[in-house]
Amino acid sequence: MSTNPDTALPPVTYSLPSNVRGDHVPPSRSHIRATIEAYLSRHAGERDALEGLLAALDGTGEPSSRATLPGHVTCSAVVIDRDRRVLHIGHRVTGLLLAPGGHVEAGDRTLLAAAVREVCEEAGLHPGDLCLTPQFLDEPIDVDVHDIDANAAKGEPAHWHFDVRFAFYLTAEQPPALALQDEEVAGAQWLSYADVRSPTLRAKLMAAEADGLDGRPEPVNASALIHDGAGRYLLHLRDDREGIWEPWVLALLGGGRTRDDSCLEATLRRELAEEVPGLEPTELVPFAVEEATSIDGLAVPISVYAGRWSGDAEAVELREGVLLTWCTVDKLDRLRLSPGLGAIPVTLQVLAR
Image (cartoon, one colour):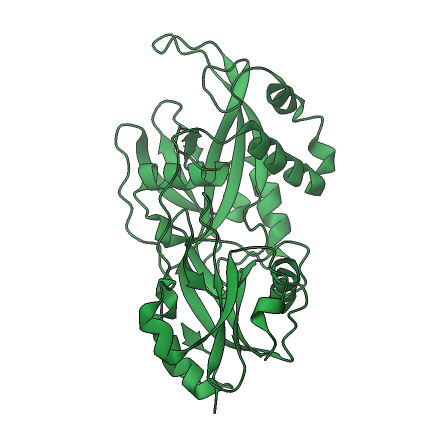
């Protein structure tokens, strides 16, 4: 965790491990539909072009199964480096330069998770090498429809791929060494936005460049380190449910940014209003950046805000999680804490002064 120099608070470094996936089932039809509708809310003019995809979502076949014809959903990862270049790989079967991607598999929790898995398999990256972009977050940057030729060897007729593409930044200053999947991939190139091979993706990238799509990671989540000024701090016991980040541990309140949030403080205040309406800290001061890990293994920079509040934690309405409680430093070694809270005692001692 890197600190804001204006706060004069000690650095705190921690990382949240990813959760174990649940049953090995593909992303649900409802998840795919919600993902596409979120995309179309930004690009309403593309609804006609995605008529085949929408028909697949209304059909009886599994939308992401390669057996679903005349078309099915695939996923790709648009990996962007600090020089505003996009990773392309040479596809052995087609001879084309493409963003890493492919078919959804059982066990892919979401379409975004499928894109992460594909780029890691094909290019040898690790999920922690990637993070979400503030412009697109976990929504697609592009959805493309392209023709796939018949493949007699696989017994596949000509069909369509409805390719759902997600944007990621590299976390490191320099692109890591690639370990290409030899059986499918022949070489790799980093291409500028203007040279990206897909016309639809190229247009989206160049339009987003003006909105700051520059390849430089920044926090997309916010959490609240709330203290009462008297040595106590507020912890939230998370639900033990599939898909919950670090289930059944005590952690900080907060959550992820949405595209409607004007800034990260707005993200945090919205999250507090949703999770614990009535809990309103008198001040929220940016004081550190937490380096966490998402449920899919992605790097997640989180802006941590220090806030002050001294209300009755048991009297507050809790809409997410199991309980909200005040804790003192001497209790920490008896609690099941989010791994990131290990360094917090020193922080809270400073805040309480």
